[in-house]
Image (cartoon, rainbow, N blue to C red; front, side):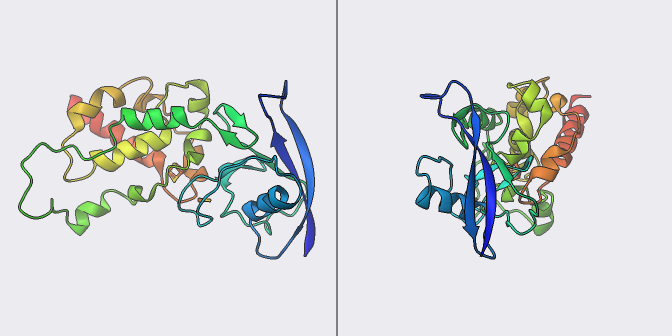
Length: 234
Ligand code: SF4
Ligand code: FES
């Protein structure tokens, strides 16, 4: 058991005129994650600390936050690699703070809706499933593994500068359908993609790639979508 220090962003807009940090000392067991430490604080030291979490298995995406300046999932980030105290925990940047580590995710979900994240295909359904070969599936480059945690979009300076920018997560979702062999939605999605708040806002900073806890590559997906838009246009 080791005592670790955590410096945590605190802000309750109902009571506080400005944000501040509060430092907590926690006795941590080997193998603990950032989320284990937050739970220890909330359950045994300060019940007012507010953050999102659900699955504790890197699946629901709700515990995304910033730790020592880098976005990640609190339930996946082990404490051991953080050698220096205090470990600084902040909410995801680029979003309005509701309270402490909880941010307003509505703009993120609105951007997602704008790319129509569903299969568009008006053809009469076949007798069995709409078949996709293993080779066609590989074209999706594992983009179906996105858990919509927002770590990528929140790490993107282009998103910080333009709140109307779709952002890497929504564009990765557009890629997931645009490069699905069964989808025929290009004309419906073209306008929102081929737009200064869409594909052309990306400056290939690649923060999204480094932030993604699932090892996905939104920058690469955006490049492929840009090629597709240009090719189809001319
Ligand atoms: S691409 Fe990665 S970082 Fe972005 S929302 Fe999906 S899982 Fe999270
Ligand atoms: S609690 Fe679900 S991803 Fe961390």
